[in-house]
Image 1 (cartoon, helix red, strand yellow):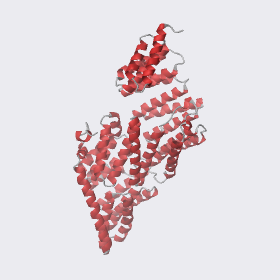
Image 2 (cartoon, one colour):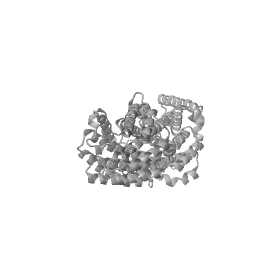
Image 3 (cartoon, one colour):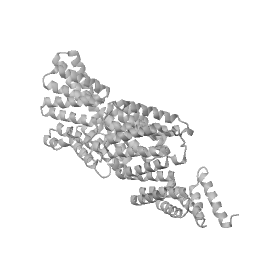
Length: 584
């Protein structure tokens, strides 16, 4: 029979639970009951668990991080002396590390996690979970070497323990970190092959196997897209889209892990669906299908809005930002500059209160503003923004993309000396990237330079190389760019028939994308060619098209300049302009 003191704290615990579970929950009364429990000096196990419960409630329902941290420290400290109290001990460590990280005490977060990892070797679930958490912390700090080493240790641990599902998760996570780091394609491909074999040989629950397959296929598609292999990746993308359908059709029972040690999922099903949309957007954009990319983007953003209404997580915000970045590029290519700058402002509003996300997306934001300024023929603003992107980028391919576009700005402005100063950065023979699309783009920029400096034979040679690479992987926009520039060169050389053979398919591709700027350029050349041929009907058609394209672009240009968001092109640092960010 419990003594009176025991009866008091047990009654308070029961009352606290009643307050917590009633509709609506009475969190204030629940917290008061739990705080009262501690005044009765209950046994260490009860005291530690109560501190953990209080911290959880404070974290979820208040902004009092200091008090929550104090309770977590108490729970962590008390649980250390209790044998076999893993759940409270390691949950306290995990939550304490999260709180340290949120409040900027990253070294403390690392210290707690490292100590907890040392103590948790006998608990497979917690050992794996804590390693994943510390690896994620390292990735957030862009310390990819430490993250990779941790994931390798987790992989080796699971191999010894015979936990196949977790072992494959660690392997796939390691590949993901290598992709973020920009490691060599050969090394990544070898591990992807190993991962594929492991996934196919896995004989656990169907839901877990499908989850692993989606993770593997996302990495495979991203790896191939990073390499510019748009055509080659189509079978894997179709597999991925089929696999995500399989996952959404599984019952709740089928996705429950077969073992408590395997209670891990890379992402929830709903977020996986959004991610597959994003990967499909990336593929459609590289292939030059802007309307298709926009359709996937709209569906994904709608899904994100629904999910954020339930719980606004960091991963959802990151996916939303990535989708908006792709949507902005779509609008710029299709000639919708006003819509593009509105969406850039939306990105700023998402970033203005999140310094970590701003740091992660800053270079992309400068690049988007630079491309917008280019499309508006504002060369000075474009140069400023591209240089800001170069200063802040830690992504090698984004750095190359910014340099290639900066080179085009210099060529347009006839700044030969400035172009020469960055020539080494964009040399296709020494370009520091695995991406075939960036290499093809580099050949195109060299061809553009040759055209502007009247080295027409060199221009043809560079552009044919760009065409060969673009055609091999269905890079339709780059193919169209190269064809129309080749047509322009043949026109300059006095070879109108060959020019027509280049510009006609360029126009067809530009219409299919659709790329309004390329359509304008192509129609300008076509009307000159048909005039030379004496083909009045086609000349009139091309003149009419050219007028319509130019009027559409001019109307949109004027609309964009009148928007308050347009002033963002002047932003390079500090707070965003208030007129841009004060909207809901």
